[in-house]
Length: 538
Figure 1 (cartoon, helix red, strand yellow):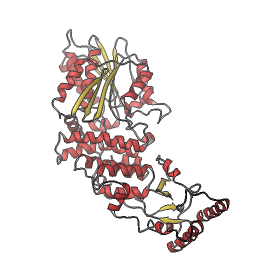
Figure 2: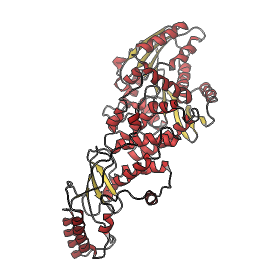
Figure 3: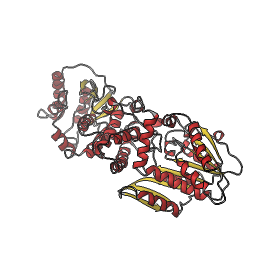
Figure 4: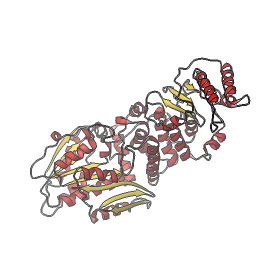
């Protein structure tokens, strides 16, 4: 979720990606027979015999099962507990469990060749008999996983993985866990089941499930980045996107909470200043500053001189339908109508690219820096050697600002491994989808547009992408606090007036929203979940 510039587009084909994913042709597989007597001790002769049998097994190569995506090429290793598939492309997925599942030495690296399945089973039967005796049924059991036997009865699958029928949340979790463990057989079956259960027009879990499944399929193909980018292939017009963002702004209090709390802290900090310079690291439409300009215009003794430096990116430009000059003109007209001396400077660059030369500092100005739902987009030490997240904070601190405001989603998706990150994403966004449901009827076409264009792209990015391609990297307030403290800032508690203003705002929304103040920091939540945090620093 971003203040007003993060968006996605799903055309008809993209909306049904999870409904029409095309099976691939085959994957490579290497088979190691299961040892029913693994707890027994081998004599030296048995150990020698076992070693010879391992050498024979290492020469057995064959093809098995079909991949869920044609673009992915996997190497599979059969273990006693599961099939584990590791994408050859190097997608950053967990390897720990797959390594622990290998019994006999290192996994076999082999190419896929054509071989008679009956002949193969006979050879494996001979090897098995030599090791475990003539009555073993391992190969017969293995035959059930050979091509043509992948699609088991859904009820039996549910019994195996312990998920009640119709439990969409648990199926999503099971699919993400199987993907983290490279268990391609389970992933393929779970995706086929999930396709039947998700819907962009269903209840909150069905709608969220549609976008989570989109991300899982993209990640499975090891092409999360390209699929994520392709979602923008049919962008809405600027007027359409503005309409979607405005509706999200109105139906949920998250953005209003952020803007009002930040403006309250700023107004308190600069109440005695005559020259104010605001650096906004995501100016978007400039809407946040309308109420602040109005408030400062009514200040006893006359309004101060206000100068705004607006940092921008291409997404904002598309939403506006033009460059930063449109923001400057809009705010200048407003300031003029209230007789407020005003100046605007646009910095049309990404926030992570901002350097001191992009900011003109003048003596005598009270400097204000605003980070509205934006700092989590800055690459940190886990992504870039430059660590722009901390670099920007140190740079801002060197300017001795009067106040710095931070509004962020209270979510932990930055450095968390894939599976915990998936669980966090599911928990956070189900709360958001439920809160949208409280304000817009479920069959409202505009609600679908709002969720697809303003929320879904974030979800796909969190699930499908890694490294620099993953730009949605939220952190909890505790981590932000550590970063600000290390950069040399100290907390600036928000005034009781800000708290009272937000409480009045929430009277217009569902009773499930709640507000809490802890140590001068404001938290806005929905039911059990903290959603947004607002704080100030000096």
